[in-house]
Length: 475
Ligand SMILES: NCCCC[C@H](NC(=O)[C@@H](N)CCCCN)C(=O)O
Image (tube, rainbow, N blue to C red; front, side, top):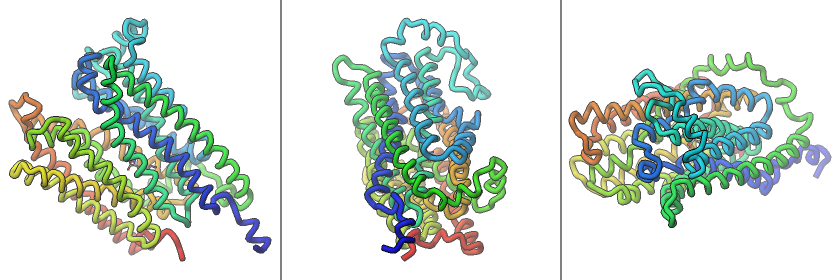
């Protein structure tokens, strides 16, 4: 080895070290995704043990994105990431996730019942349950749900901040190497977290004595392990930065807040951000209604419907890393986004029109499998494409702005779909008798707009040569 080669060798050139860094980043994200959905399978128990009606549960669930969207927390998170770096922001986001989750646990624990905190929360933010009340609180909401919403609000800031930090960290360690594969593996691990929670949370809760707070306690402990993973990552990151030293081009040209204008004035950035919000608004909000939609169409129990839905995160987890690997070696990022949008349209259209007509379990499985493939194609291509479009100094902020725009959709669409279900089912009061054709057509139309943006992105790439269709690894 020549002297120059020796100087250029850093920790990220070691396969073991960079994949080790990924394991630390991905495990913190895995625990974050577990907490995100820990209460989703326990709605019935929350109603029985803590008197949370559907409105209280809905407000609690919506609180996750509240500070990110309305207090612009995600924009600040991006600035913090670009100014302070991955190490600092990882530890900060891990701590915020943990503290928010701990408050959420306290709120659903027995210790909260009869406490002075409960008395205080009973009188807190008693706003009317009207269309203009966009806060997570309303008059008549149980104190435990209000307190949980406060905790979940902060957890939401932490987990989204962690999401952009992990993406930025992966670019730092894997740029020019197996970057899309690494992002694919990270997302696959997160999807396994969702699958684990769907089955694991009710099991933990049902251990005698039945307790809604037990699964939350376990998830909070896992977040503590996630924080420790981020702290361990910080040591690796520090070592890498020391090695990069003078060679780090970002040091010569540090991030300035005024540089954000460059992001907002970039056409290609807007194409990606809008595609992201449209696509994800037809995925995560759909997830919230999917079980009920399957129950209504197939006359299934929630458990039977859950087993069909289970294929979705698990299938996506299995395929995403392979597609990431494909993107690294062969490219075709823009084409993958287009194909992913097409599959989503086919799936949502089949749920809108074919499933109610046939009431066939096979159609339901085929639709879910198609959606799983779509949910592998789009994330596997979308997130690793961002570094090709944005200056690396601005990458944290670019991810943050994309997440912020996406969070607006994730906040609005569950409510929009809720209203569409009500208006398209006049007089229906039994939650197992809803007709889901119109709501599913709304989801399909989001896919159509995402598809149009996919074509525009491909054309823009061809014109300006961003390299979206090119492999990440140059032979
Ligand atoms: N390193 C993470 C890449 C993004 C993965 C992406 N997650 C998101 O877009 C989150 N903002 C979603 C939050 C969900 C809220 N319930 C994904 O595909 O999961």
